Amino acid sequence: MKRTIIVVFLIVAALVIVGPSLLHKELVDAKDPATGNLPRRDIIRNAPPERRAFAETLRWFGKVKSRNRTRVIAMETGRIVSIAARDGVPVAKGDLLFTIGGPLVDSRLEVLQNQSATLRERITLAEQMVRVKREAVSRKFAKREELTVAEDALARLKAEMESVKQAIQQLQEATHIHAMHGGVFINRKVSVGQEVQKGDDLAEIISQDSIYIAATLFPKRRDAKLETKRAVINLPEGRQIQGTVTTVLPQRTAEGATVVWIEGPDLDSALSPGQTVAGTIILSEHEKALAVPQDAIVRDDEERAYVFIKGSSGYRRQPVKTGIIAGGWVEIVSGVKAEDEVVVQGAYELFYQDFNKTYKVAD
Image 1 (spheres, rainbow, N blue to C red):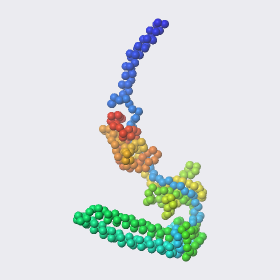
Image 2 (image 1 turned 180 degrees about the horizontal axis):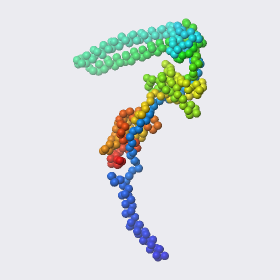
Image 3 (image 1 turned 180 degrees about the vertical axis):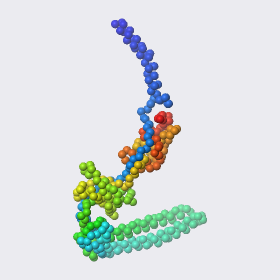
């Protein structure tokens, strides 16, 4: 029994004497040899940018319709003053079908034209005033504030003139009704001299070519070019087919959406009239664009984008211009070269910390 107690005592004593030195050795071995600090779990990893394909897309939803019958409706209240198409005769896309006029339309057009003429005179006077004020300021006969007031007045008049011009153009377009697509003009419901209300049915155009999709979308830019763009249609079973935007309707919906027609040879066999579908329109495609993972991009409080690039003396912060973001990757428009070593992991740690005191540059 005594012998057992003595053995246990010797083991405990050995641990007390030797243990701290062993623990100290493990900690020393685990330290970063460059900084003397314990390693962090954060790891900085570098990689050159990759070449990837990006596509700028626009989502849409719509309904499949038959091109057998398309309604021709009045776009403005007024009187039918001429009919350019005959029943049963083929018409081409863009052909003039009806012209709407009458006292109401003539009165609106006259008011707009009078406004335009008055504004032209006021703009002429305002331009003269700006020239006079500019000359006076240059000779120190007038204050710059007076010139600013005159220039602001001219700018407001020009904006008002542009609005009137657009109103005249819209009225002219609404009173001249054209065929939205080719087909046979049939079922005319009105005659010359007949009064019509906005939205009234005037006739129909039939076509046996194919079905189409009336797609509704909200372009990010009003000047986005949609006609002839490739459209992807998502089918319920997970497949995709493709079509082309053939028509952009001139008037927006009450919600401000744009309506386009999507057509293509694959639609006939895959879709049925009345079916609701959705998909995307490919606005632009960028093949082999430089790209980095999303984690490589850091942004400051003003949303300016940066990456960190490894150099001979450490890491430097580099401003970049980014493009499309897709699949966890960001298109780099400018700021990075193909041979650069970009931080793809740990970028925000470098952004918020003085990394030279915390991290060792990995070879």
